Image (cartoon, rainbow, N blue to C red; front, top):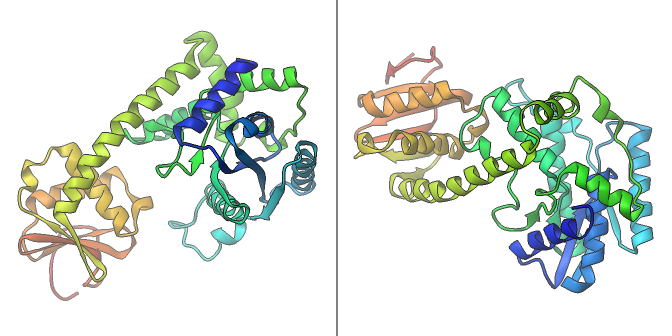
Length: 348
């Protein structure tokens, strides 16, 4: 895939979201994956009527190295004759003033700010699409990390080929990093190496440098393809499951003030997998999706089956799930804090 096949993968990704005759912003960090993607899109741009621009987000996490990355991306834009936009996005402020429960990790904060900045740059450039350079290796790393840390079916869907609205696409998701490097060598493309990728205290780096190569060598030389196939199968399943969940939520959920109300009738007849997804969706709509754990979902499902009128259980972030008549209510607690257990409505 060191040549035309990589280009064909990018063309397929463009076609999947109808990226033609418009502006496209490619996110470039300066590393080999994003630089190769910029070159590939630059080669395809005229044929597809794409007005290419480059977006670089400087998180300022590596001092002089971060500044050198930015300079290299600006130089790439000059060589390709493509406009470059840069946004500073240090993640520290996003982590300040939060409780330990709500504070995002450094990587989570950087990711949130990165996509916000890319969206802003795309709007400023008049770009309808944003391309990021996630590869098959990134997909495999994501799936294995989620498995090692614990995940459910949705987590096994990994990184999607594109966002639900088609605005963000990942044209290299079916291309291995080895193939990206071969393309760069063939085309004489230079890039910046991120020194933090060599630091062993990041789990993803250890997985990338030691575990994945060992698994591929000792168990399955087509490991990347196997994991990519698993992720795609799970995503396809999740798509039609999401429709069923959405239909059931539309029948059962209603919002009144700060509370989400859930109709109780027929709850016992729901398949457990559907009931579990509805419970997760209810927590997410109540603003506590990040805090969901299996223990919370189990308690919610048990309460949906056995909770009596006038009782409630406490949930993360000051929420409660209460039964009032033939409906359940999830939202801010109406009583004083108590230990996490079923309790009758009333005074403290």
